[in-house]
Image (tube, rainbow, N blue to C red; front, side, top):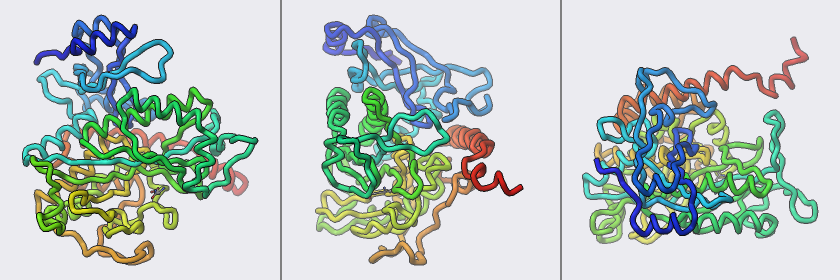
Length: 451
Ligand SMILES: NC(=O)CC[C@H](N)C(=O)O
């Protein structure tokens, strides 16, 4: 395989803007940016860079699962730059660039352990049918005051005039103004990184915001979402703010989602979810059925931690079922009102804590399996179904239950293969063991005096 080099125009830009280093970056399974930097000159000359294969499956506590999940001899992968993603690093003081990379195994194939590979493999399955998904992720996140004490609840940042938000201030502009300098930097960063944002709003929780990305190609949107979350955190640190993308950072307050709007176009750019007469197609029905059948088995991919499951409570606009319905926020799979060309389904289950590559891969993969297997969905839900007994499949209520469903079901292996499925489950087991080994503030508060 020919190792890619930057175009003449890119090389000239790197030199002229005094870029010293280029970060060769990729998302690990948690969604953290990892990689190595290369001096700009070496990058322009096409120098190859390798990194341990295991880095893609580093757990969120920094530990790795057993060698057998990534190779007994602890092998390397090649970091293969995707030159279309070469960008300046907005948060760097010294000019620096980044480029997103694929992890390539020694046989020249995409390493199955890397999240970008998982998404690319699902997209190849679409491409084999002459189809391509169109997606639009929406991200909610909280701004908190910087606080190093992990045992204390998060505090909202101070606002103009020494105020602090009490919450439930949704859709107001005042707090957007309070954080104007931060949001201006985010805007600038998005421009530099090629992230196309659409609407920005204040969400329901105190200092909770939502930013929607413009719809487009799934790999491009996964890259943008990954970079956007990194940009949020880095920019927050520069403004004395802590940006938190956990699914449920505050008890009693709304959680943070990563809703994913999705449709599919054919080779002529026609939405396959609609017939020529404007009615919903069979493919649309099968796609929704695929989400209903397979999302419960794929849940650890888009609800990756014990905290993810705390978000699913009634009354805070979070999904608690796998029903589908038109313009209905009491279901997990919402079909927004639209013209036939924009017919789409919004998967409301993923949390903002999800790795965007894996959340997109799982969601698009589940829908595609529904099409391939010609599954039939349940009847559309009508009205508020939060408290109704539904015929849609149940969602696992904890990470343990979701992992069991993933391991018992065939969905993850069908889509991502045995190596990824086993390695991902092993990563989650490392994290769960660490979680269960910790004594919580609740235990100290309520149990300490009883014994
Ligand atoms: N924007 C909304 O619909 C709110 C979503 C809600 N915060 C959730 O956790 O899913």
